[in-house]
Structures are given as structure tokens and as C-alpha cells.
Image (tube, rainbow, N blue to C red; front, side):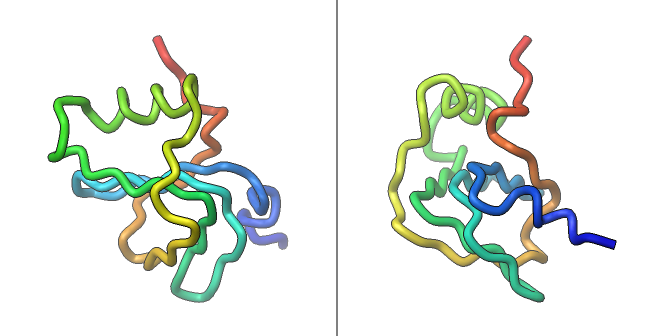
Length: 90
């Protein structure tokens, strides 16, 4: 069975958390306990007046606001993974 991450490698993805933080970036590696994103954006939705959904929708339409060259995120912090281009805006 192929790891689900294989098809996501090199793609711009969204890592959603249970809290106010969302990560968006190009997936370059997945370890046993980590995700590695490059050309990435860490966004804390407490810092603005926009919900996570609205922020991710803006990134999908306007591009990722890169504020980190590379980040390593603990897999335990992530509740869902999706391609940025798969975000649906209604």
C-alpha cells in the first residue's frame, strides 16, 4: 500500500490544526513524526479578523504569503491535510 503522502510531494498543501494555526507550503518531506514544508506560510488566525477558511481561500486565489523558507511541523499538531488547489470556496 502506498503512503497517502506520495501523491502530495512537491505540491502546495494546507496543514490544518485544531487550534488557530494553519500552515501552507510546498511539501518536501514527511518523516515518522514530522511534515516539512518549504516556501511556507505559518498563519495564526488570532492575529487578524479572518477565519482559517477565509485565509486559506485568499491564499488559494492570491498565492501563498511566504514567511518561512522551511518549516518542520509535528504530525501530532495536524488534524487534516489537503492540496491548496482543492480548497472549495462557496
